[in-house]
Length: 347
Image 1 (cartoon, helix red, strand yellow):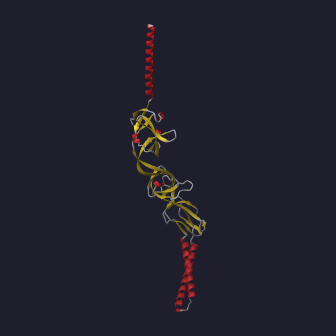
Image 2 (cartoon, rainbow, N blue to C red):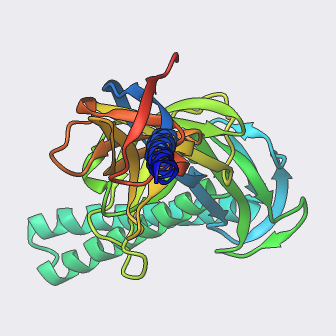
Image 3 (spheres, helix red, strand yellow):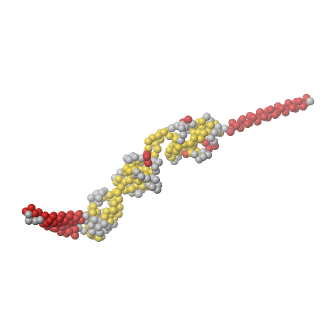
């Protein structure tokens, strides 16, 4: 009986220590299950949002010069690709017949003028009726019109460039016979030059006339001003047309080049989040994982700008991000509501 009591006591003591040891192991496991994360405090920074648009450069004017008279090209004084000042003579149409026509009309005009002067004197003396005087005046005015027309035709034998521009193309050669309306040359005005872009309705209210812009064309930076904002959108794309004017005195920018337009808006406060720290919740909403009182929270955010290696963001709620610690390491392994062991980032 004594032996039985001893064995029972030993068995009870063994069971007690076994369960105590299991409890201690269980506590150790629970402690080990608390995940460690690295965090840092979020701070607002001054941020300037930049709008970016893609477009193409376009010449301010492209004009096809046409002949105003008929005749043979007796002189050609231009070459493709060269720049000419306004008023430079490009072509001379043989003026011989125009000179003869002008002299003929001048003689007719002098005759009609004398006839009118005589009729006017006779009318004043009562020897000529008012009807005859009116006929003489009409003949004189018709002769004057024909004279002026022949003078214009003679002047039009000299084809001049209307504004400072570059010859883009030539349609005639020396000795060609041209008719009225035939093409002579295509000219292009590159100063100023315009960059034309299409913008969405979401940003159109951020733009104004004479707003300063930066333009990148062929890896070079230029400054321009917004010169035109469309008041109506394209019925298909719902985009608005905007034109940026760039001074181009050196003619460095040609028409048709791909262009990137950048417009800086007013400064605002925002938070910069590296791309690797952006997460999605179960509903597909964009946000970040933060810690408050050792508990993981998921905060949805509004992305203001994408820099390529990160995002400028604001919360889309009343939450102040400065009240939370951003998880910078370990956010992939924790879920919302989970308790974590935190340590501050050395960055």
